[in-house]
Image (tube, rainbow, N blue to C red; front, side):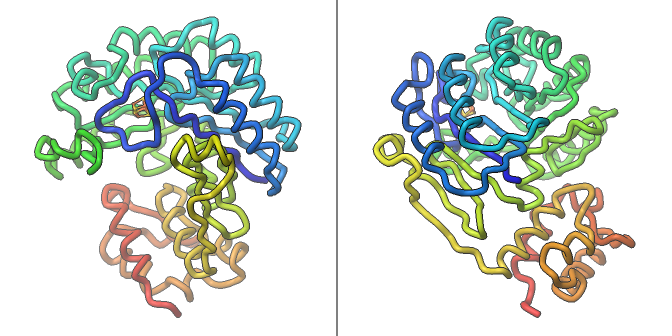
Length: 364
Ligand code: SF4
């Protein structure tokens, strides 16, 4: 079984903090892109059993329903798609209409991920988003009424920071079964990169992070930045956190198949001329895959069990990484259980420290 990721690199407007691969577009995702994408899918020769499909971006809600039908038709002809497939589509609140949601449902979309970010107009203006708070409320109402399984994306850290508690309260009023909340970063190479002096300090960051978990009662923080009602965890993203395989299609999409992490051409023109052509392909060593697997699992509340590790690598977690994992236990970032290791509350807050320690783990 594998997961399918489709990257849709178009947005109506460009948010100044965003470092995803995207470009501005006026109308729907162009036919040239849809044709290239379907050619790439048709030429794929990897694992054909798929249990998740995730349309990410960019703004996948800019795909016209007839183009989405074409892409899904090609996927269904090429892959053996599981009958209980999780089919997610990311959407901008401004694109949501009842008509569009009806089309998506008819085409088999069963999970919508809505990029709300905030219910505060000043925050949304600061972020340069194209929707306003009322647009977010309207979209949440429509999505919640049509889809059992949906996600609300939120962001903490943008100014005015004081608006975040009210956004969390309003989020709860829509009772989404899944919420992702990430801290705003001021990435170099984006317009926000030059405004990094506006970033909140670490204490405020940690306070807002803690407030998120406290406010989203009823949702379990099952991953560092992701919260879900039991049974609504994102199966596609769990594949990344379990370091499982996935096949990526579209410009800049990554794949991880047969131990090779590869990335499609990033530039749209190159992709259109050579869909599926790679700009990089790394044949990961067994050790690199082991390290990545441990790091990814330790982003999850469930952590990593020794049995899972042994099943996967035919080797012992405690002999391969015991020293570094126990050092992380003594620093209070991990907890050792009968099953294996999992992050503590501090391990969630300072999760990158766990990654850094494992990357430097001595080879045994
Ligand atoms: S809509 Fe999303 S992908 Fe597009 S620019 Fe804004 S944050 Fe980036």
